[in-house]
Length: 355
Image 1: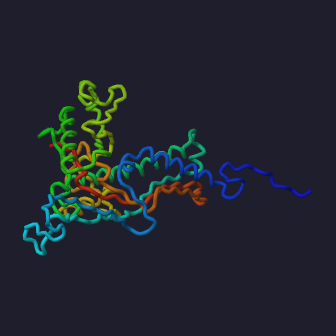
Image 2: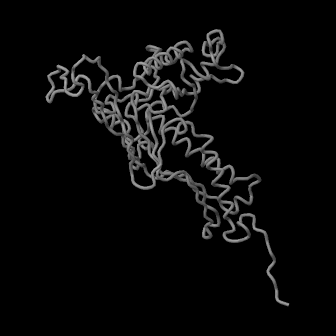
Image 3: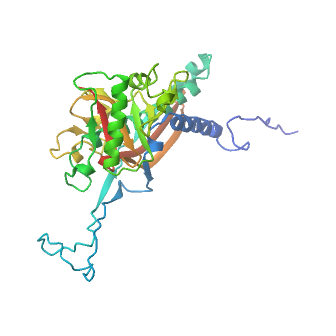
């Protein structure tokens, strides 16, 4: 009687055939993707576009129209507006500006970990799951940090999206604490009102407005007596949950990734593999930063923006690879993406600062 190999169930094998680790990789990939999506704050509330090939993507920019009362009998097409322009300009026809914003793909960002067989065997907990969480978080955190810095670059820009210096198309820094280096809750509420006013004056849409504060200033709004949660003043929040929903029509969020001080020489945000110069490309001097890093110090406590403020272009969305390396007796796990970030509308960008 011929010897028959025993039928062994391999937990990572799909339908009892193929790679013994096929399903393990999918579990790992699913966990990384879930952690990334749960952790990432900025990308779901800003603009995104995916491209199948190429190195850049363009976002069209359209200006505003004009209006004028019509005098009976005058031609809408040819009546001179009297400005003396050459050629003559109709006083009825809108001259709508057009431009585009280009966002480039940065280098491939990777987060990886190697697990030796012997170390994994000795561990008394699921080390793969722990590594998965850390890899997913780090990629999400980096995207958040880059987008927050992009909003700050938009707030500091002195060149608008049409290449001019029209104040109504520019963002701003907001300081309602004067020469102080810290805010009171009342001063912070004033900052919300000033941002909302500036957005209204620039005709920024009222929906999709956000302010992201560092934890110290976020929880300042939740303290007892703060009007941000005082229902007598229409406050929306709770001391019990430590949440503030919105102030001045702006949704309030918190993040530990608001930059402070200056970036070190070797900062990842100054990498030569970053192809978006969000500070210099929107400054008349072109000497205020490199990549996603500003040359000047960050005295930032928060950012405010509308969802059309900044955008992300993806060439390689989040992907995961895993490989057993026989010569090293262990498994290499890697997650990666290739994307870039850029400013779309400066007038939607605000930076809340101290002295």
